[in-house]
Amino acid sequence: MTRWIELRISAALATLLIAQAAPAAADDFFAGKQITFIVGAGVGGGYDLQARAVARHLPKHIPGKPGIVVQNMPARIAAANYMFATAPADGTTIALIQRGMLLAKLIYPAGVRFEIEKFHWLGSLNSDVAVTLAWHTAPHKSTQDLFDKELIVGGITGVDPETTPKIYNSLIGTKFKVVTGYNSTAAIALAIERGEVQGIADWSWASIKAVRPQWLADKTVTLLLQGALKKEPELGGLPSALNFVKNDADRKVMELHFTQKTAARPIVAPPGVPADRIAMLRQAFADLANDKEFLAEVDKAKIEINFVPGEEIDKVVSLVAATPANVAERYIKAFGSEPKP
Image 1 (cartoon, rainbow, N blue to C red):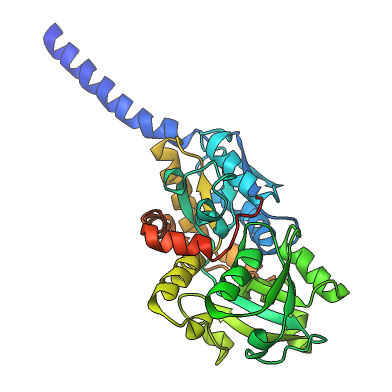
Image 2 (cartoon, rainbow, N blue to C red):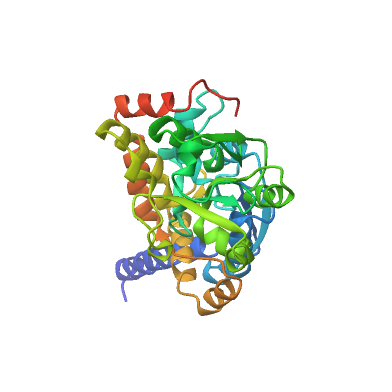
């Protein structure tokens, strides 16, 4: 064999080894590492329950099988800000953020320091429908009562339990009074049971079934309204907030608000994470959605999972980011003066 042929063979082998080593190196990145899973909500609520179930099963679907530790960060805007600007951009930090963060920049421009279109959206654990309910001691027994009598509801600064009743009051004329400052829907649920507030204007139907199934079984609450782009069949004839919108301009504003329900439990990674690691994480969540052990656990715990792929969430984010200025302006005005984040 001539020296020239030997060199050609050596070069070919080197090229082959490099090609094989590149994906292997990517696959090995997570081996021996720990992923921090930030939850932009308090302990015990729907977001938290879902995140902890995910943390128990997701590692087996990530090459290298890293450990996952859940860290709650109830300051929701701060959690998203942290993921955007501070979290390590290497794939070792992911977050389940509040869906309200999709529209937070319109409501809290002074507090928001992230751009939704620059996050890596790994998917959403489910899409959702908002439910308004009142405790059995409240005088509200029908949807019409929301327009005739003040209902005192618990709120969480900057997210749906606070923002939705403000939208309803502005666009369809309901009479919610929001007591804000709670750090989770679980905390609001306790406040309802203690008589601090009369109800909640926006709580995920899936979370109600998971966190307070006895309310439904014992009929200690009255369901008054649902809110999403599409009605939930399980809720039967419960009226949708969209039924009460009076004009097309207001409908566009409310539809913008409900767009975030498609990404009800969105999971993000920071900007700058290498594309191969994002692909691995997206695939891991897609595989988790078909994991029989995981699905059996969440079914037993009555935690609803209806996974929406990252590619679909990208479409929602693009629509929100491209909101026409006139619709965005009407949306902002629906909240009145800007509250503190």
